[in-house]
Image 1 (cartoon, one colour):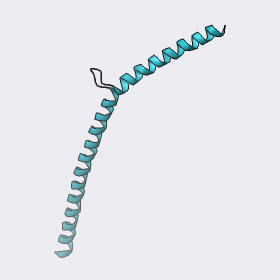
Image 2 (cartoon, one colour; image 1 turned 90 degrees about the vertical axis):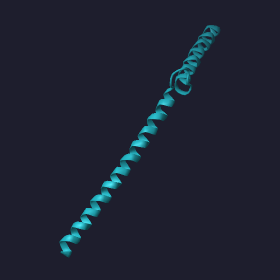
Image 3 (cartoon, rainbow, N blue to C red; image 1 turned 135 degrees about the vertical axis):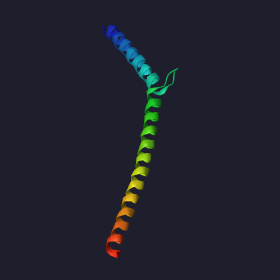
Amino acid sequence: MANKRDKGIGDRFKEICEKLDSIERRLFRDNGTLSVQTRLDRHEQVIRGLIWALSVVGGSLLTTFVAVAVLAVRAFLGG
């Protein structure tokens, strides 16, 4: 009876190890197609680039609005 249980546990352990190997292969190895990890890295790079571009545009717009406001105040007070 213990041998059947041990064999069942061994079979189950082998199935679990095979599934883990399959998951690892899909996540971390490039086997002809892009792995999930590579795709995530590329998405993160694109997001970082978009955030940088938006911050540059936002900073430029803020600077422009402040400059226009300063010119408007000077024109109103000075003249």
